[in-house]
Amino acid sequence: MLRLELRKEPSRAMRYATPVLAVLLTILAGGIMFALMGKDPVEALHVFFISPLSDLFSITELMVKASPLILIAVGLSFGFRAGVWNIGAEGQFTVGALTGGVVALIFYNVPGIWLLPMMTIAGVLGGMAWAAIPAFLRTRYNANEILVSLMLTYVAILLLSVLVHGPLRDPEGLNFPESRMFHDSATLPILIAGTRANIGFVVAILVAITAWIVMARHVIGFQVRVMGEAPLAARFSGFLESRIVWLCLMISGGLAGMAGLFEAAGSVGQLVPMLPVGYGFTAIIVAFLGRLNPIGIVAAGLVMAVTYIGGEAAQIELGLPSAVTGVFQGMLLFFLLGIDVLVHYQIKSRRPSAVAAKS
Image (tube, rainbow, N blue to C red; front, side, top):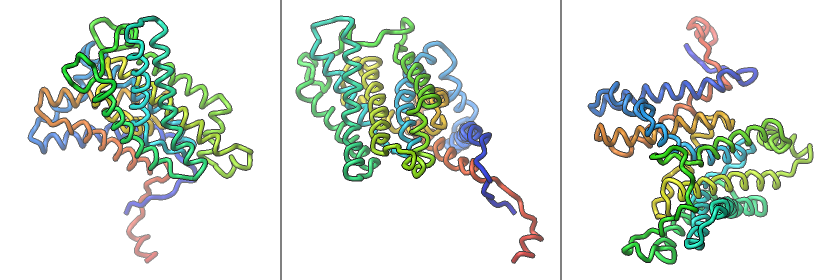
């Protein structure tokens, strides 16, 4: 008979092994799902997981998809470690794209090397401003930041839709709900000619490295960790909870806003209603898959980007619905949370005779 027994202390080995096990179980469950759908599991899994790594173009697309996931997840990891649950990164992503895009449109006929940095600052400030709403309500009225940030996501998406249907609509766009295309000074430099890979991926890696240094070596990272692991000890030490709440939400909102601006000024090149595609929600999975460690988040972001590229390939080559991407991401989160119990518990076997004697 098998039972779960509480460990004396959390297993460090299982903490880092569970994401790998979750990925392997997701692949196994995906093969079973493909078989039930009448597809060859080996072929389908090859299309889904190997094709995105098979040529230079696919790898560059992987970089494009991974960049916003890494940026947003790194920001979220600060809050999650401190017990601050920002679930509205998708809204901050949208507002960051909107504020940075407005700067590009204002200076549409004024190109210059200064424009892209100004757009980036505007995007970061836009994301921070949107995250400031749940921060203020949490610290001033003890409102639940989960609900507030989540509901603000839909407000941000509707705000973007209203503006691109109205004041920001391209006057020469045949009445389509989209802004002007950004000119060259307002778009991200391309890393590899002939592809969509841009400098946003490099920035995401640098942000992750900086976040790791802050989390591991700086007093801010220490305060964040203590507030999340031992809030009572943090209060006795004089750490102000309100200050940490504000700090975490500003970091996560700012990086989400940067990711939104990079998406608008990178692969899209304009403001459109369909700009928010769920990166803010997927980044939550990325953060936990990477164990809230910025370096682990880089690897997790690349893994999650594979599901996006693989899902698109599966639609084209196998005729599968677009929902297959969400199914794989959901299975990955399910297995990750399920196996995560082994960090604090271990499986023990009990002999039937012992069980009978005890009863």
